[in-house]
Amino acid sequence: MIHPVILCGGSGTRLWPYSRSQRPKPFLPVVGRDTMLDATLQRCSSRKLYHPPIIVGGRRHRELLADATGDYEDVSIIIEPEGRNTAPAIALAALQLPEDAIMLVCPSDHHIGDEVAFRAAVEAAAALAREDWLVTFGIEATRPETGYGYLKKGVALGSGFRVAEFVEKPDRERARAYLDDGGYSWNGGLFCFRAGCFLDELERYRPDMISAIRQSVARGRDEDGIFLPDADAFAGIEGESVDYAVMENTDRAAMVAASMEWSDIGDWNAVRTAREKDENGNAIRGKADLVECRNVIVQSDGPRVSAIGLENVIVVVDGDQVLVIDADEAQRVGKLPGVTKT
Image (cartoon, rainbow, N blue to C red; front, side, top):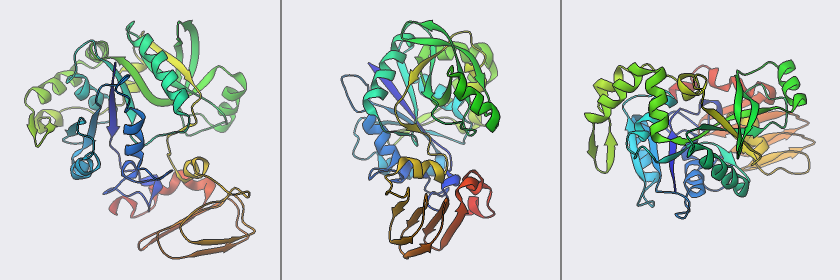
Protein backbone atom coordinates (compact mmCIF):
# COMPACT_ATOMS: atom_id res chain seq x y z
CA MET A 1 0.00 0.00 0.00
CA ILE A 2 1.19 3.47 -0.94
CA HIS A 3 0.69 6.77 0.91
CA PRO A 4 -0.19 9.62 -1.49
CA VAL A 5 1.19 13.00 -0.44
CA ILE A 6 -0.46 15.79 -2.43
CA LEU A 7 1.32 19.14 -2.56
CA CYS A 8 -1.17 21.98 -2.83
CA GLY A 9 0.79 25.21 -2.73
CA GLY A 10 1.69 28.02 -5.09
CA SER A 11 -0.32 30.80 -6.64
CA GLY A 12 -0.81 29.65 -10.23
CA THR A 13 -0.28 33.16 -11.55
CA ARG A 14 0.72 32.04 -15.05
CA LEU A 15 -2.94 31.11 -15.58
CA TRP A 16 -4.09 34.60 -14.60
CA PRO A 17 -6.74 35.96 -14.65
CA TYR A 18 -8.60 32.64 -14.30
CA SER A 19 -6.22 31.42 -11.60
CA ARG A 20 -5.47 34.00 -8.92
CA SER A 21 -3.54 33.99 -5.68
CA GLN A 22 -6.71 33.71 -3.56
CA ARG A 23 -8.04 30.79 -5.67
CA PRO A 24 -5.23 29.15 -7.66
CA LYS A 25 -5.46 26.42 -10.25
CA PRO A 26 -5.71 23.35 -7.91
CA PHE A 27 -9.15 24.60 -6.90
CA LEU A 28 -10.35 25.22 -10.48
CA PRO A 29 -11.64 22.96 -13.28
CA VAL A 30 -8.82 23.90 -15.64
CA VAL A 31 -8.93 20.89 -17.99
CA GLY A 32 -12.12 18.89 -17.38
CA ARG A 33 -15.18 19.28 -15.18
CA ASP A 34 -13.38 18.41 -11.94
CA THR A 35 -11.00 20.72 -10.17
CA MET A 36 -7.37 19.73 -10.51
CA LEU A 37 -7.23 18.81 -6.81
CA ASP A 38 -10.31 16.62 -7.20
CA ALA A 39 -8.75 14.89 -10.21
CA THR A 40 -5.59 14.23 -8.19
CA LEU A 41 -7.54 12.81 -5.26
CA GLN A 42 -9.59 10.59 -7.55
CA ARG A 43 -6.41 9.33 -9.20
CA CYS A 44 -5.29 8.06 -5.79
CA SER A 45 -8.67 6.78 -4.62
CA SER A 46 -8.18 3.00 -4.96
CA ARG A 47 -7.99 1.64 -1.42
CA LYS A 48 -6.49 -1.57 -2.84
CA LEU A 49 -3.37 0.38 -3.79
CA TYR A 50 -3.40 3.57 -1.70
CA HIS A 51 -3.76 4.62 1.89
CA PRO A 52 -5.82 7.77 2.54
CA PRO A 53 -3.91 10.78 1.21
CA ILE A 54 -2.12 13.55 3.05
CA ILE A 55 -2.48 17.05 1.59
CA VAL A 56 0.11 19.70 2.39
CA GLY A 57 -1.18 23.18 1.69
CA GLY A 58 -0.63 26.83 2.54
CA ARG A 59 -2.19 28.95 5.27
CA ARG A 60 -3.84 31.24 2.72
CA HIS A 61 -5.82 28.32 1.30
CA ARG A 62 -6.82 26.59 4.52
CA GLU A 63 -10.54 27.23 4.07
CA LEU A 64 -10.42 26.30 0.38
CA LEU A 65 -8.78 23.00 1.28
CA ALA A 66 -11.31 22.27 4.00
CA ASP A 67 -14.18 22.95 1.60
CA ALA A 68 -12.58 21.01 -1.27
CA THR A 69 -12.02 17.89 0.83
CA GLY A 70 -15.34 17.91 2.68
CA ASP A 71 -16.55 14.85 0.77
CA TYR A 72 -13.32 12.93 1.48
CA GLU A 73 -13.69 11.72 5.04
CA ASP A 74 -10.26 10.07 5.28
CA VAL A 75 -8.04 12.87 3.95
CA SER A 76 -5.41 14.36 6.28
CA ILE A 77 -4.41 18.01 5.89
CA ILE A 78 -1.19 19.72 6.96
CA ILE A 79 -1.08 23.52 6.73
CA GLU A 80 2.36 25.09 6.31
CA PRO A 81 2.72 28.33 8.27
CA GLU A 82 4.37 29.78 5.16
CA GLY A 83 5.62 28.45 1.85
CA ARG A 84 9.12 26.96 1.95
CA ASN A 85 9.14 25.02 -1.34
CA THR A 86 8.77 21.27 -1.79
CA ALA A 87 11.49 19.72 0.39
CA PRO A 88 10.06 20.98 3.71
CA ALA A 89 6.50 20.23 2.58
CA ILE A 90 7.38 16.61 1.82
CA ALA A 91 9.28 16.28 5.10
CA LEU A 92 6.23 17.47 7.06
CA ALA A 93 4.24 14.60 5.57
CA ALA A 94 7.05 12.05 5.98
CA LEU A 95 7.21 12.79 9.71
CA GLN A 96 3.52 11.85 10.02
CA LEU A 97 4.17 8.38 8.57
CA PRO A 98 5.93 5.19 9.67
CA GLU A 99 9.52 4.95 8.42
CA ASP A 100 8.65 2.05 6.12
CA ALA A 101 5.72 3.88 4.49
CA ILE A 102 6.03 4.24 0.72
CA MET A 103 5.20 7.84 -0.22
CA LEU A 104 3.90 8.91 -3.62
CA VAL A 105 4.42 12.68 -3.90
CA CYS A 106 2.01 14.31 -6.38
CA PRO A 107 1.50 17.99 -7.15
CA SER A 108 -2.18 18.86 -6.99
CA ASP A 109 -2.20 20.81 -10.25
CA HIS A 110 -0.86 18.36 -12.83
CA HIS A 111 -2.90 16.77 -15.60
CA ILE A 112 -2.55 13.07 -16.37
CA GLY A 113 -4.60 11.82 -19.29
CA ASP A 114 -3.66 8.11 -19.22
CA GLU A 115 -4.44 6.81 -15.75
CA VAL A 116 -3.63 3.20 -16.64
CA ALA A 117 -0.10 4.24 -17.57
CA PHE A 118 0.08 6.35 -14.41
CA ARG A 119 -0.79 3.38 -12.21
CA ALA A 120 1.78 1.19 -13.97
CA ALA A 121 4.45 3.83 -13.38
CA VAL A 122 3.45 4.16 -9.71
CA GLU A 123 3.73 0.41 -9.16
CA ALA A 124 7.15 0.34 -10.85
CA ALA A 125 8.30 3.28 -8.72
CA ALA A 126 7.02 1.68 -5.51
CA ALA A 127 9.00 -1.50 -6.26
CA LEU A 128 12.21 0.55 -6.45
CA ALA A 129 11.27 2.63 -3.39
CA ARG A 130 10.99 -0.55 -1.32
CA GLU A 131 14.65 -1.15 -2.15
CA ASP A 132 15.49 2.33 -0.82
CA TRP A 133 15.77 4.12 -4.12
CA LEU A 134 14.46 7.67 -4.26
CA VAL A 135 12.42 7.59 -7.43
CA THR A 136 11.38 10.38 -9.78
CA PHE A 137 9.12 10.01 -12.79
CA GLY A 138 10.74 10.58 -16.18
CA ILE A 139 8.02 11.79 -18.53
CA GLU A 140 8.44 10.89 -22.18
CA ALA A 141 9.65 14.02 -23.99
CA THR A 142 7.46 14.62 -27.04
CA ARG A 143 8.74 18.06 -28.09
CA PRO A 144 11.80 20.26 -27.48
CA GLU A 145 10.33 21.83 -24.35
CA THR A 146 12.36 24.62 -22.71
CA GLY A 147 10.05 25.03 -19.71
CA TYR A 148 10.93 21.73 -18.00
CA GLY A 149 14.00 20.25 -16.39
CA TYR A 150 15.25 16.96 -17.84
CA LEU A 151 16.48 13.61 -16.52
CA LYS A 152 19.24 11.65 -18.24
CA LYS A 153 18.61 7.91 -18.12
CA GLY A 154 21.36 5.79 -16.57
CA VAL A 155 21.83 2.05 -16.11
CA ALA A 156 18.82 -0.24 -15.70
CA LEU A 157 17.52 -0.98 -12.19
CA GLY A 158 14.80 -3.62 -12.26
CA SER A 159 11.62 -1.66 -12.97
CA GLY A 160 13.48 1.58 -13.71
CA PHE A 161 16.85 3.22 -14.17
CA ARG A 162 19.44 5.16 -12.26
CA VAL A 163 19.32 8.90 -12.87
CA ALA A 164 22.59 9.70 -14.65
CA GLU A 165 22.07 13.45 -14.53
CA PHE A 166 19.57 16.14 -13.58
CA VAL A 167 19.51 18.81 -16.27
CA GLU A 168 18.24 22.35 -15.79
CA LYS A 169 15.76 23.92 -18.19
CA PRO A 170 17.57 24.07 -21.55
CA ASP A 171 17.51 26.51 -24.41
CA ARG A 172 15.74 25.47 -27.62
CA GLU A 173 18.85 24.04 -29.27
CA ARG A 174 19.76 21.82 -26.32
CA ALA A 175 16.13 20.73 -25.87
CA ARG A 176 16.09 19.60 -29.50
CA ALA A 177 19.34 17.70 -28.94
CA TYR A 178 17.85 15.94 -25.89
CA LEU A 179 14.80 14.95 -27.90
CA ASP A 180 16.90 13.60 -30.76
CA ASP A 181 19.15 11.71 -28.33
CA GLY A 182 16.23 9.74 -26.88
CA GLY A 183 17.92 9.18 -23.52
CA TYR A 184 16.38 12.19 -21.81
CA SER A 185 12.98 12.59 -20.15
CA TRP A 186 11.12 15.53 -18.68
CA ASN A 187 11.39 15.84 -14.92
CA GLY A 188 7.73 15.63 -13.97
CA GLY A 189 7.99 16.58 -10.29
CA LEU A 190 6.41 13.34 -9.04
CA PHE A 191 8.36 11.20 -6.56
CA CYS A 192 8.16 7.90 -4.74
CA PHE A 193 10.31 6.83 -1.80
CA ARG A 194 10.25 5.29 1.65
CA ALA A 195 9.55 7.94 4.29
CA GLY A 196 12.52 6.94 6.43
CA CYS A 197 14.88 6.87 3.45
CA PHE A 198 13.87 10.37 2.39
CA LEU A 199 14.29 11.74 5.91
CA ASP A 200 17.71 10.08 6.23
CA GLU A 201 18.88 11.71 2.99
CA LEU A 202 17.48 15.08 4.04
CA GLU A 203 19.37 14.71 7.31
CA ARG A 204 22.51 13.91 5.35
CA TYR A 205 22.35 16.89 2.99
CA ARG A 206 20.24 19.49 4.82
CA PRO A 207 20.62 18.83 8.58
CA ASP A 208 19.56 22.33 9.60
CA MET A 209 16.40 22.07 7.54
CA ILE A 210 15.27 18.74 8.95
CA SER A 211 16.11 19.83 12.49
CA ALA A 212 13.84 22.87 12.18
CA ILE A 213 11.09 20.78 10.57
CA ARG A 214 11.25 18.21 13.39
CA GLN A 215 10.93 21.00 15.95
CA SER A 216 8.00 22.47 14.07
CA VAL A 217 6.21 19.13 14.01
CA ALA A 218 6.99 18.37 17.67
CA ARG A 219 5.53 21.73 18.72
CA GLY A 220 2.61 21.55 16.28
CA ARG A 221 -1.02 21.00 17.11
CA ASP A 222 -4.24 19.64 15.65
CA GLU A 223 -7.05 22.09 15.09
CA ASP A 224 -10.41 21.04 13.62
CA GLY A 225 -8.80 17.92 12.16
CA ILE A 226 -5.97 19.85 10.50
CA PHE A 227 -2.34 19.62 11.63
CA LEU A 228 -0.62 22.98 12.14
CA PRO A 229 3.18 22.88 12.49
CA ASP A 230 4.69 25.42 14.85
CA ALA A 231 5.14 28.69 12.96
CA ASP A 232 8.16 29.99 14.91
CA ALA A 233 10.24 26.86 14.29
CA PHE A 234 9.11 26.70 10.68
CA ALA A 235 10.12 30.31 10.04
CA GLY A 236 13.76 29.32 10.48
CA ILE A 237 13.69 26.99 7.49
CA GLU A 238 15.42 28.06 4.31
CA GLY A 239 13.09 27.03 1.50
CA GLU A 240 14.38 24.66 -1.15
CA SER A 241 12.99 22.24 -3.71
CA VAL A 242 13.29 18.50 -3.17
CA ASP A 243 15.37 18.32 -6.36
CA TYR A 244 18.05 20.69 -5.04
CA ALA A 245 17.94 19.56 -1.43
CA VAL A 246 17.97 15.79 -1.97
CA MET A 247 17.52 14.34 -5.45
CA GLU A 248 20.51 16.03 -7.11
CA ASN A 249 22.79 15.09 -4.19
CA THR A 250 21.83 11.55 -3.30
CA ASP A 251 23.52 8.48 -4.80
CA ARG A 252 20.16 6.68 -4.57
CA ALA A 253 18.29 8.63 -7.29
CA ALA A 254 16.31 6.45 -9.68
CA MET A 255 13.65 7.04 -12.31
CA VAL A 256 10.79 5.22 -13.94
CA ALA A 257 9.85 6.00 -17.52
CA ALA A 258 6.27 7.19 -17.96
CA SER A 259 4.20 8.03 -21.02
CA MET A 260 0.90 9.06 -19.48
CA GLU A 261 -0.26 12.24 -21.26
CA TRP A 262 1.22 14.36 -18.49
CA SER A 263 1.29 18.14 -18.24
CA ASP A 264 2.09 20.46 -15.36
CA ILE A 265 -0.46 22.93 -16.80
CA GLY A 266 2.18 25.57 -16.27
CA ASP A 267 0.74 28.16 -18.66
CA TRP A 268 -2.10 28.79 -21.10
CA ASN A 269 -0.29 26.88 -23.86
CA ALA A 270 -0.36 23.78 -21.67
CA VAL A 271 -4.09 24.33 -21.08
CA ARG A 272 -4.68 24.48 -24.82
CA THR A 273 -2.74 21.25 -25.32
CA ALA A 274 -4.69 19.40 -22.62
CA ARG A 275 -8.18 20.58 -23.60
CA GLU A 276 -10.30 19.25 -26.43
CA LYS A 277 -9.91 21.27 -29.61
CA ASP A 278 -11.85 21.69 -32.82
CA GLU A 279 -10.57 20.87 -36.31
CA ASN A 280 -8.69 24.19 -36.42
CA GLY A 281 -6.89 23.61 -33.14
CA ASN A 282 -9.07 26.10 -31.26
CA ALA A 283 -10.07 25.43 -27.65
CA ILE A 284 -13.12 27.34 -26.46
CA ARG A 285 -14.72 27.55 -23.03
CA GLY A 286 -17.60 30.00 -22.72
CA LYS A 287 -19.24 32.05 -25.47
CA ALA A 288 -17.11 32.73 -28.54
CA ASP A 289 -17.39 33.17 -32.31
CA LEU A 290 -14.16 32.46 -34.15
CA VAL A 291 -13.87 33.04 -37.90
CA GLU A 292 -10.79 31.83 -39.77
CA CYS A 293 -8.88 31.37 -36.53
CA ARG A 294 -6.30 28.68 -35.83
CA ASN A 295 -4.71 27.47 -32.60
CA VAL A 296 -6.60 30.01 -30.52
CA ILE A 297 -7.75 29.47 -26.95
CA VAL A 298 -10.71 31.47 -25.67
CA GLN A 299 -12.05 31.32 -22.13
CA SER A 300 -14.77 33.68 -20.97
CA ASP A 301 -16.90 33.59 -17.86
CA GLY A 302 -19.53 35.87 -19.39
CA PRO A 303 -19.00 38.22 -22.34
CA ARG A 304 -18.99 36.74 -25.81
CA VAL A 305 -15.60 36.90 -27.53
CA SER A 306 -15.63 37.44 -31.30
CA ALA A 307 -12.44 37.17 -33.36
CA ILE A 308 -11.48 36.99 -37.03
CA GLY A 309 -8.24 35.81 -38.57
CA LEU A 310 -6.29 35.18 -35.36
CA GLU A 311 -3.62 32.52 -35.03
CA ASN A 312 -1.74 31.33 -31.96
CA VAL A 313 -3.52 33.78 -29.65
CA ILE A 314 -4.90 33.38 -26.12
CA VAL A 315 -7.95 35.34 -24.91
CA VAL A 316 -9.16 35.04 -21.32
CA VAL A 317 -12.02 37.03 -19.79
CA ASP A 318 -12.55 36.60 -16.05
CA GLY A 319 -14.65 39.08 -14.12
CA ASP A 320 -13.28 42.55 -14.75
CA GLN A 321 -9.95 41.29 -16.13
CA VAL A 322 -9.10 40.53 -19.78
CA LEU A 323 -5.93 38.87 -21.05
CA VAL A 324 -4.92 38.86 -24.73
CA ILE A 325 -1.48 37.49 -25.61
CA ASP A 326 0.52 35.76 -28.30
CA ALA A 327 0.66 32.13 -27.18
CA ASP A 328 4.46 32.15 -27.53
CA GLU A 329 4.56 34.63 -24.64
CA ALA A 330 2.45 32.50 -22.29
CA GLN A 331 5.28 31.95 -19.80
CA ARG A 332 5.42 35.70 -19.14
CA VAL A 333 1.85 36.09 -17.86
CA GLY A 334 2.92 35.81 -14.22
CA LYS A 335 5.18 38.84 -14.67
CA LEU A 336 2.37 41.19 -15.68
CA PRO A 337 1.92 44.19 -13.34
CA GLY A 338 -0.88 43.60 -10.89
CA VAL A 339 -1.14 39.83 -11.33
CA THR A 340 -0.01 39.01 -7.77
CA LYS A 341 -2.42 41.62 -6.36
CA THR A 342 -5.58 39.87 -7.61
